[in-house]
Length: 272
Ligand code: SF4
Image 1 (tube, helix red, strand yellow):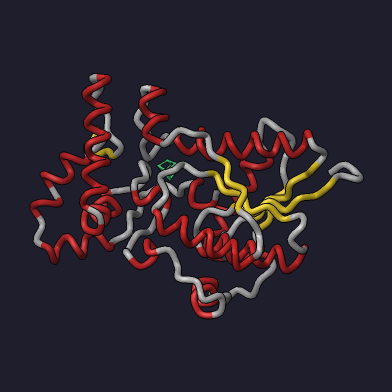
Image 2: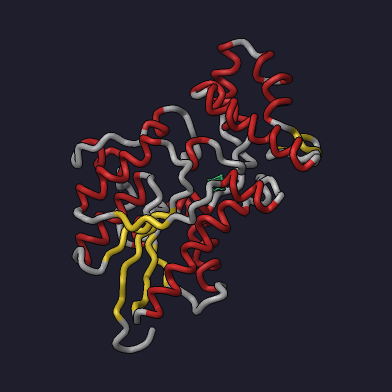
């Protein structure tokens, strides 16, 4: 870091409890003036995530710095003629990663040097490692990243409990609705079958819209593609609904929906 550089503490404010908790910790440690609550908005978040973010920001005493590309993930898929999927999600790359890099570049043009903070806990050190790798192998100069919940806080910190009981802020509703991945309102192209079964169970209309998007994409570009794969071939949400979900009893669906997708790919969006 150059001498006399103006350091800014850039908290990746993702809409989750951990990132809000880390934001408060950073403000308590460094004061508000040099802290930025940074949020890259895909415009697909659940409305209650937006409510939580606003209430937590207000408690912390900072405005959210919201950066928005202007396109939704669906816009990105149709524009690129490529349907995002578990292996390649260019929605994340264009709406989050690229926006973050542009923001960092602009900070540096103003003589500011970011230190980036993530709300990642001690049970997710592998994610911290991959983020550290990411931010040291950028097309820009490397950026320092910090993980206060791993390196600086007590290991048994109960962020969710403290936010609800001490801050008096209700957690985003998706926490209580069985979603293991709470970004993009449950419509993440990287999610797996159990997650999509939960989406069908909790918000069937949202599942129907997502299924419709996948069908429109396939028809428009006449491509046999899907967000999911089964036995190595594309497996659409429509097939999944007809062949699996609608054949289950309500009890079976409920049990299936609450299981975790072990093969789901950890998404950069969970922390950004
Ligand atoms: S959460 Fe999923 S759908 Fe949303 S931008 Fe990230 S990868 Fe894409």
